[in-house]
Length: 224
Image 1 (cartoon, rainbow, N blue to C red):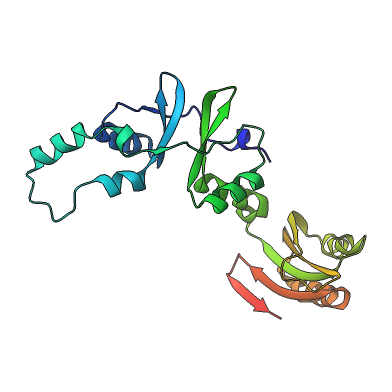
Image 2: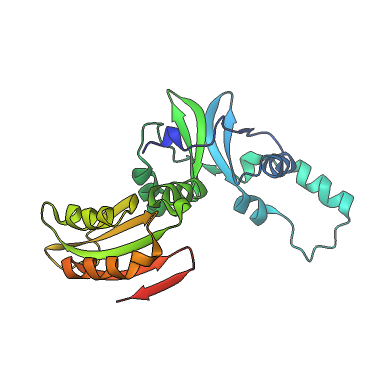
């Protein structure tokens, strides 16, 4: 999954000489939390809602409202932005981007293609990707297994689910926190007759180690 398919576009940007008040208005109008800062079509920094909050007068200020607005209009973005911004290209993968945000402890980055800012991607967009990948929009049931790391182990349990009339929305796997020689597998399925659910669980337990089951229709959870 590539950044270009999940980024916010077109990018809402701001000039480095613009005021802090202008940045606040842009973020409020477009419901965004990060603005690429430009200088003659060149990316020179980023400003976030956190930067604006840090630069804003304290809530205990004795300034009158007109004085406060004047102060915000005199503070330029170049004085509060983060210079030397980190950016990613449109063909970066989502997981590469998530790793980059985590490593640098940042909430988002501009997306740059041939020197032009073509979009912005933030942790909120990454959450949307997670929701899409897991298939939770289908609700249904999620099973978690600890399976042998061998060819066909996932197919074995998937065929059991399909044999009971279940339709698979997503299959995710991870070696994290799994014993050596095994992997954790998460399968979300839907469209199964609930009358057959107990029989399905028994069939799955006979074939593999079932870690948990979450039924989103009635929010029931079973940990094994």
